[in-house]
Length: 146
Picture: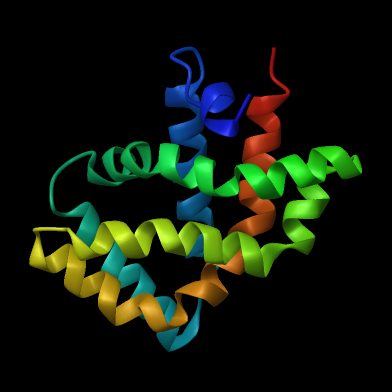
């Protein structure tokens, strides 16, 4: 059974989306300096597209993201600690997630979304790698929730 099967069932999906959105907000809040300001400005612009846009996008991306993360998580399960394995494999994890968003960004019709993504893409891997520990904890929380 894959991460999508576990985490996106109707009983958990909205909680997973909420926790992912909260994680994104916390990650943004921790950013400082010029790059932090750029990220916060870009995020504010995306939130301004329409109410609920960020949760909508997270919900849209999660199935493919979880499919991309399945091999890494499964390796971690086999090794006895999927959270630590994902954290130790943060570069590979970031690449897996960014492969999903890169593919999606190519087909986005809204110029503000595509343009914002393209402007921030060069620094995205570092930011995603920094978020991997929190993402792994979100996954673990809901995988192990009865």
